[in-house]
Image (tube, rainbow, N blue to C red; front, side, top):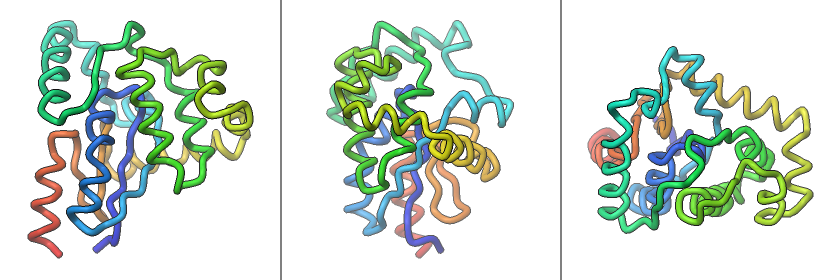
Length: 190
């Protein structure tokens, strides 16, 4: 069995935000490290044949209410951003270019900037204000672009069809609401 939990996410996904807020406690409770794996949710949708939930008109009102309930239950600061959905190519490249050890804090900072502070995290100037000009420049490196593409394709190959998706070895768990199930599974399958 894998010795870690892989967390595939996109900062433009509200449920990735809610899952990301639980990763530190998940690691503490299970004793397994969490590997934060930035991906492009649009690429996952395309590669898996799925579509964004918001693209189904009748889901919009429910989604807004569900996100409020979930964030309140988890104690996570949340406000629906004025720009939704948002193109997350730049922020996800920025994260893909960061050292693995910095990903949790940087990702949580981006999540909060978008899902609570209503910042336009697709804007390079906003990203530079949050992380510095060098981080934004690094996001343009070909190797960083390829890493994000490769990680997105890997998620699809392994069965992901949305975000957040978590893996423990070959076992996949989809959605922020499956973290409890993931904990249960780990407790019963080690």
